[in-house]
Image 1 (cartoon, rainbow, N blue to C red):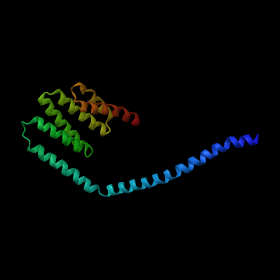
Image 2: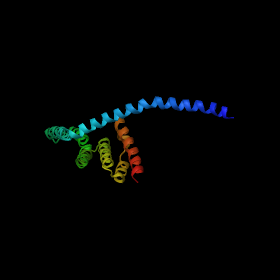
Image 3: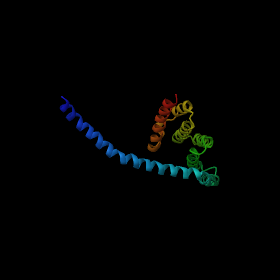
Amino acid sequence: FLYFTLIDTMPVRFFLLLVTIAIWPVAILSQNANDQLFKELDHVIANKKKYETLKKDEINRLTNRLNAVGDNMELDRFALLGELHQSYFTFDYDSAMYIAFKMSAIAKRLNSPSLISEAKLKISATLLASGIFGEAKDSLATVKAKFLSDSLKMSYYYTSSRIYFDMADNY
């Protein structure tokens, strides 16, 4: 009886030994990779002011371009506001929201369902990124997806799914 028990457990023990030997170098190498990532993160954090300056310069360039566009060139203003919104989006939510509302005003003046839907999508995405889930959901419900381009439809469905995932995580 003891002989059969040893035979049955020896392959299992041998297998566990092989797995341990195979995994050990991977664990050591992943630790080195993590150390490198933390060093890179420390470097980026140390250069925070530089990245803020670059972002502010980008925003100033877009603002200057926007100011150079005539008031009667509403479509050009809408497009530039979209770029400005994207620049503000991860930098300053309040300004991103203000820009999205300006886009909405232009879209309504032009009476363009596709531009109105795009502006509402930007408002919804900004609310979501700000953590204001209920308002983001309500705002997104007013977007008419049929008026969106294919790329904006992807953004619409992504934003819609993110709202529910984030709400599930936070409620």
